Structure formats: C-alpha cells, structure tokens
Image (cartoon, rainbow, N blue to C red; front, side):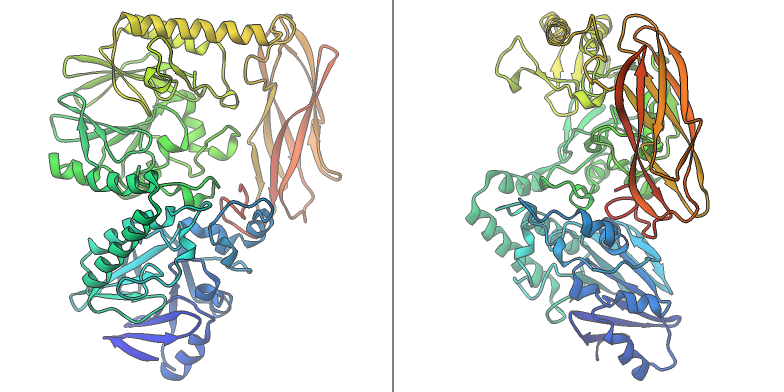
Length: 623
C-alpha cells in the first residue's frame, strides 16, 4: 500500500483499492477481494473502516463485499445497479442466456447479495465522515456506473471507476457494447468524460491503471480516441447522439414557451414573468441510446435543460412539472427533479395513484420509482401556475392514463396532446395521422374521436406533443383528426364481435390491485381489490373466485355480485399466507364467471413474502 496523495493510499488487488484516512475513520473505495482489510489491520491498527464505496458492479471490483458486511462496514453501491448487489438470486434467475442479444457485461455481476447501507444516486452529495462525495453519472463501462468526486486541500479528486485506464486508453472496451454489434456504451462514455472534465479534477484515480496527475490531457486524448472508434463504425444514430449532445439547447416555440432540444420524449418549458420554469413532461435525455433489453440501468434518466435555462434566463431549477401521461419516457426524470430541486408534481387525478404507487398496476411502460404528487387535478377544472391558466382534459388514444393539457400563453391557446397521435410527416400523407394506440394501455376505441371532438371545441392555435413537430391548427387538421377518430371506431367494430361480447379494444376483463402484493415480516394478511368488466349488453350475475396455492386462504373465497350492462364492479378479498412462507413473485389468479359464461382465470397478481433481498426491481420484490 502506498500513499499517492495526502491521506489517500492505493492498495493493489483484483482492482485498485483506495483507502482514505479521515478523522472519523477509514473510507475504502472499491472492495476488490477484501485483502485490503488485512492490510489495514496491520498498517492502521487503531483505525476503523467506516465505509466502502463502489463505482460499478464488476466482480473483480466488488467480490469482497460480503467480508466487508461481516465486519459491519457500511456498504454503498450505485443506485442503478442495486439489483446486481442486493438482489443477486433474482438477477441470476432472470438473466437471459439463450438467444441472447443483450451485450451488457452483467455476467460479471456479484454472485452473493449484500445489504447496502445506501445507494449512490446521480448528482447526489453524500457525507461519509467529514468527507463529502459528489456522485457523477458516468455510464460507459457499465450502463449504471458512477464516479466519485471530493475535494481535499483545494484539489478535486475523482475516482473514475473504469472510465479511463491511462491517457487515451480504457481497461475494457468490450463492455461498451450494450446491445448487439453497437457502440452505445462509447456514446455514453464520451458524455461521461465530459461530465468529469466539467468538474476540473486535479487527480484521477482509476479502478485499473496508474493515478493520473494530468487529468485534462488524459481525458481529452481518450475522447479523441473514442470518437475515432465511432467514426470508424459510421453508424448514423451513434454519431448523431454525440452531435445532439454538443448542440442541444432550447428551441423557441412562442415568447415564453421553449422546447428542450436535449429531451427524448419532448420536454417543454413555460417561463413565467417572475423567472420560474414549469416543465411539461420530463423524461430521458436524447443522446442516451438505450439497448433493446429493458434493464433499469439502461433506462437511466439524466438532467437536461437545466444549463440552458440557467444560461438564458438565470433559472436554476424547475418549479413544477405536469406530465401528459405515465410512460417512462415522459416521467422518468421527475424523481430526479424532486430529489435535487424539490420540484412539485402536478398531474391529472386519473393517474395520480399510479405515479404514487406504481407497484399496484400492470400496464405498459410504467416507471418503477414512486413519485410524490403535490397537486391532483380533476378534468375540466381550471387551475393556475404563476400567470398561466390551465385545464386538463380526458385523453387516452395512446394510454388511458393520460391528459390533454390546455393553456394560454403569448396570446395563443395551446394544447399538449401527449402521444395520442403523430402527424403526417410520419406516413407522408397529408390526410392521415400516425396512429399511436396501444391495446394494453387500456385503449378504448372511442377515445380518438372524443379527443378530436374536444380539440374542435377548443380550437387551439398550436398543438404540441410528445414526439412530433408543433402543429399550427386549421380546419383541415381538425377534420383529419375527426376522420381518424371515426375510422378507429369503424375498424375495430368491424373486427370485434361487440354486439355479443365487448371488452372494448384492450380485452381486459378483470384486474387485481395491487398487482405486486408484498407480505413483509410477520404480516400474514393483505387486502386486494378485484375489478371486473361485464362485456355483455345486459346485466349479469358474476361469480369471482380467488385461485391460490395450497395452504393460502382468501376471505371470502368467492364473491357473487350483479354487474350492469358493459359496467364495472370491484370487490375486495383478504389474502392470508402461511407464517413461514418465503417466496418471490408467486402468481395468484381470479376465476370469473358471468351469467353462466365461464371466462376463466382472466387476471393475475404477483405475491412476494418475506423475501430477503430488498431491491425494488430486478432481483427484488417487484422485478
């Protein structure tokens, strides 16, 4: 072990392990194979190791963590890789090995779970002893990797993980392929280099390689070399991702309404006279190329729009965000805004509960982090933010859990329609729209026509949306929308036997809430709600029976109720599980009969009880 800077020591192991000496104890960065603990006991016999921080999940970097845990040392790991540390059982059970086009190096994940003291969240400043570490999002070697920055004696020191090995070089380029035959990791790597450079570090301390005392030179050379690799590959989407990052800013729509050029699903900012900003939607940053495999580390939201808001208006944070709908690409950044800036979330009543309790639902594209809703707004009721007045309206042509947002700004009436339809550039026909309906999003065939009728009533000057160009509204646009809505009804009524059996377009006859049902500790009983839909045009008697594993109980086991024509009803059951049960994602079902018509087990939920791994996704309870 050698001292490389004041009170910072390097121990060579399966990776570089760093030991920082502080007044309150020793802080270790990277566990390695834990041989550092033996070295510490001989070199610092009177010192206590108070924490072990880790930059990414590769086994040679973290395989010694169970020994740190045995010694009651606090463990901190990257937030976006938590299932790889704390949920290894589920992670390895779920990891695909056949017909595998997922290029991430997740096979280098730990094989034994630990229980972290805390997770290292992007942009967070975390106090360990008297040290304050900034967590820098630095994807590249892995999608969820971080770097750690802190200041000592006026010098900024950055633990870079495997971002840089030496000037212009990386330890492992193979891990930059996240998909299949791609360079998505390189695109993120370049972005990460720029994040580190922006902190103006004095020393770089890599996971592999020698400490670097000329950081600017090392990082600049590496960025140039990675760009050579991208240009050699000549894949337009990869080159465009870097170009977009370099030139992204705010695009003026009206005097006070701006489009965030770095947003994936489009974020719009409304600027008040008092110098505040409201966001409509806040999802992914556009340079982020995401693999086909949906792991949470590959759907990692990053800040965007904050710097141009600061540069143009002196605005340091987003005051309020209003989402158009619940899909991840429109809301995944909201928890980040709430954590960093205290941003308030205002949303339609229709999907307030879903955003606050995502585990209760099973619809497509749900973001798993619960969000605090500060204001739940009913449809049709005017509300105000600063000098601007808004009304939310029912939407649903893309997802039931959505709202059209009407507001006035700069003497114009503007409606944000979310993702309910695209415009003619998508199909190269001026008389048609790009239809964006999704059946599992609880599609109702009449929703498009209802939206068209509403827009004809409002007659906005502008339509803005989640993914398409701003539209200046005229009679032709409104007529085309109405035509599209009428055709949507006609086509589905041609295809579906609606006069005999009508579950509308989504064909969902029952749902169980919560979908993810958890029994923590000794709590053996939980209530669930079952909602059923009558597809017949006359009232029916319904028989609803729970289907459970042996030794589980439902109270009652059967409900018998009347359901009105094409109506909905909800009933409650209490589920009781055996006291010593330990299970993860055990399916249960509900068997429904309507008016003598046996419909079968048409809804399910997933039960987790007393599972020792606590991550909220991947290997944990919800997954």
